[in-house]
Length: 88
Image 1 (cartoon, rainbow, N blue to C red):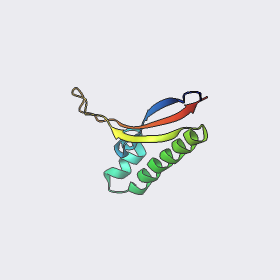
Image 2 (image 1 turned 45 degrees about the vertical axis):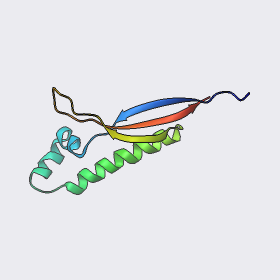
Image 3 (image 1 turned 90 degrees about the horizontal axis):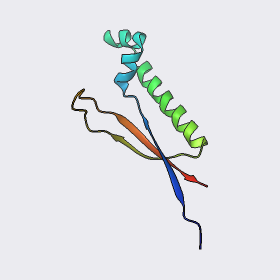
Image 4 (image 1 turned 180 degrees about the vertical axis):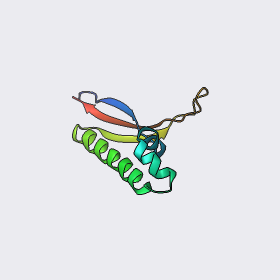
């Protein structure tokens, strides 16, 4: 009888485009005057590339990208990515 496969799961938050503006004052100032949109998109893409590359190198496989239901208190929706990898 073959051994049963066991999976390990990991869910991580994914910043929204607005999160970059909330946490980086220089980007927020540029966006306020209608500039810097490319910089925000580039920062977001770099985060995704780095995260997916690192996790992929560690054996993690992307399973889903999803949004949580809005929080009743803060009216905030979290964007998340779930990964899995085979446990040996």
